[in-house]
Length: 593
Image 1 (cartoon, rainbow, N blue to C red):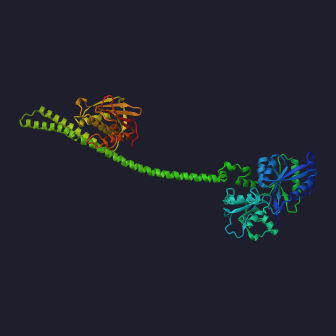
Image 2: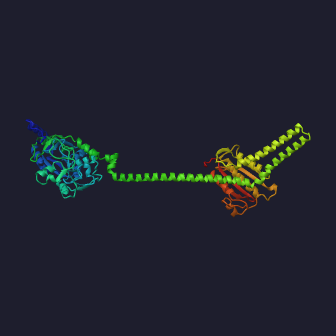
Image 3: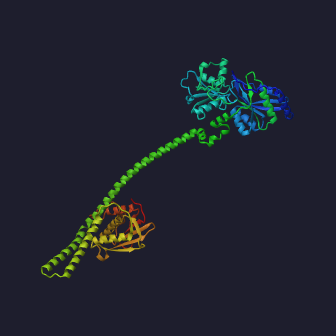
């Protein structure tokens, strides 16, 4: 049995209506035309509702007032309300909620169709497909299908179904399905489904049952996708049920007029089509639908929430996401390649460093080889002296001429010569030792002085070396000081070799320590003969040498050592005097490896 909610008759209803009409008389004198804006589509059983019957009954119930119906589209209806061109409006639930939020319209009654369960459960969507479509059973199966709809602002014909599909993971706005807009009447959606222009059709609830009752279609040819029975509701539905259309009063409408219209509507008997009026329904469920679909008063959620941005700009966001994923993948790939190449570079640097240490070691051994005769001479002298003193001591002992003073004197001299030989051997061993680079902070003047003393000790015929120190006392250099000494050994030895043909008094090497903008400079100055500009340009090239027995590696190794310390090694010809100046520029602090 169908439940129809209307206002029950009351013995005093006519008397109450008469009092309301008396209160309305003042307004009727001023203006007897009342404009009602009606959303231009609404149908039952495939035919439009005769709203003219409502207009006629209102005019009869409120004497002296002429009611005028204005069919308008959704956008036209909004503009008319905005311009205060209407006293009342009749529209679907979603537009009413939007206009109520924006312009303050107020519902005074709700349409009730005969199949409605209650004012809040009257209208929904039925989603149809052909009966033989076994691939479309659940709402999620609609993804990628062709969907026939009347318009995207139709409530039962689109919005109620859109909410259900969105909950099933099918976003119609994001084109998860292909929409086919067929326009009104709503029966066209079923025709598109029948003709296989669409895979699915969305219609208002109860339209199918009415068309079947009229013999227009056979239910056996169709099936409802994901049906959800509602107790007391006689029609199939794929969505929850919502309130039907409300009649609302505009903000500027006279309150007495609005009350008179409300009373008249609620007092009307059911029409021939079964339409009646109820007290205003609760439209909270429609507000929730609007919030989920982000339409009407909740349209701002499209730009103020992540879900809205994702819904509104999903294609762009997916593009950006794919771009970001591509960038991340490229970054990871680059990092892997960088790590791999860094390891390869470290390995190559390790090999190069090891080769450099070996080359430096060979260079030191080469220097020792070139000085071997001098070293032998330097060691022979203390050894010969020791032997001479020992033999003299033995002769005096055999002759019985030993004295305490003589033994003490000879012993002291033997010890002195032993220490002299030991110093030569220790210097040679220290210089020739193969070792790892060791950085330390040490006074630069001390390093230079030790280099001078070591080389002078190893060669008694080494030229005189003068040291001019313009540094502040204790000026320190962070470096591998033994490597710096090796560079100085090479430069001083080359300076000595270049002056081999000069008289002893002219064979002088000048060492000058000074400050630079970034650190220190060490100048090694000789008095050797001039050399050509072309030779000067090639001095630091590997295997280039001006010596008949040289390898051409000494200066190249010196240059690599200085550059490894973050410095520079340069050479200049002296002017106007003859000779060369080798200039070391060393930073005070460096991070060589």
